[in-house]
Length: 308
Length: 283
Image 1 (cartoon, rainbow over the protein chains, first blue to last red):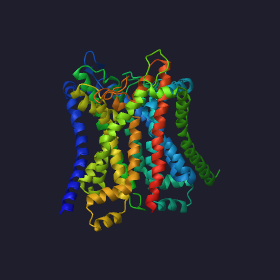
Image 2: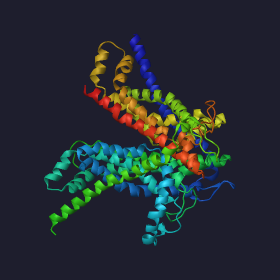
Image 3: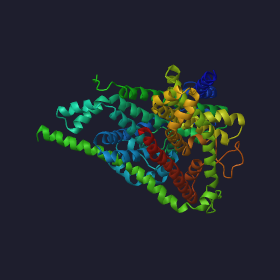
């Protein structure tokens, strides 16, 4: 009798806690939505498509921040994806056994470095290096492209993209590595039996089989880049302007919240910042769901399954 | 050049490219480490750990209050996030093989992906607005939310690894499921759960964004949990973007302390505990 009583209580208590976590998440959405209501009602859809950001006249348009987030994240993906795939291929397929563990640990250490330390390094280590070495080179040989035009002060979209790419490398590489390891060895053996070289084996059997999982890993990296705040805030220059040049300072959605939230005085100002947060939430939500579905498709395939 | 030679060359090329990528990733790691150690080590001394920050222009001073503040914030977040995370994980592994379990697992994944700055905004509207003051409590709340998904999912994974036979043996002796779970299943999986908790702490120890408008920062020793509180990452941020050389040095010293703390926790969780756990599993 007593055992039954204790056990049903135990089950109820843990269920309650689990429900609490769900409720907390739902409440987060509800709370942010109600708090951004003034801005949604007053500014409507215009908020997302105009680019004036004037706290004095209370006219808010989030377009420069949305643009900054999109461009910096894609720049990061552009750099991080090939490098991460190289790492994952090396770690899963090519590296000698004794290197795999320590090397993957080192790559994952990149994820353990706090974002504010990345920012500090970005300001005093990376930005001067880019200014003195990389930027003159790019300006000389590729300066005719609009994306490499203009003055460069160290803080810019370019710097932010590079720092973001370093920060998302561990995410993309560790997830792709897992996806590669989920490829059944029969696939590899089949390729080898047909006389494939080890690169052909990787391209045909491993990459072919795990295509959607790799895409998932990249999207997961995108999710991380979109939400990253501190490091980007410290190196992007924080200027709400849309400029074609990557060397110009920019601003992202996360950075504007970080910089202006405590200074926001009027209700509408705070509520527009919260609305930016809400948009950020839904963007990362969609991105994460898409990534999980894609990764799940690979890791849950039947062993030795035939690729469609 | 025949086809065979071409294939061989492509093979060489791609394999070396992959190798190059792996070592390319180590360049920023070594650079960050080099910068933090070389620039920070000269300013890390006893004063740094026990003194308050000095006003601009006066050399010396430390981040004693920020280190204490960080510890208080970590303590506050552990206080509520560890029980919620572990019990949530117990639910998922013991009773979560149903629709609700899937929903909870999905929610945890969603929560894990929410940018930390958004969680800061949430904590602001929930605590700072009604209390009309930035506070340690709101900071601890925000950091706790970030910890929960990590702890919950590792707890679940570790509990699932505990063999079914152990549970059945206990139940067959007439022990309640509650006692079985607490004294046997949780106890067996404890090292693994500790790993999850340590990883979660390592993650929040460096978090700055959710503290910007909850804990806010403070230049003095702490007087209460409803007051603004200093934190190491916040102090590093404030000093890094300041125009003063002396403060930059302090920022590097703070970064060194923070990075050593975080790496130590990752290291312990990965090697020491993981090894002990492997040993347990193989028995």
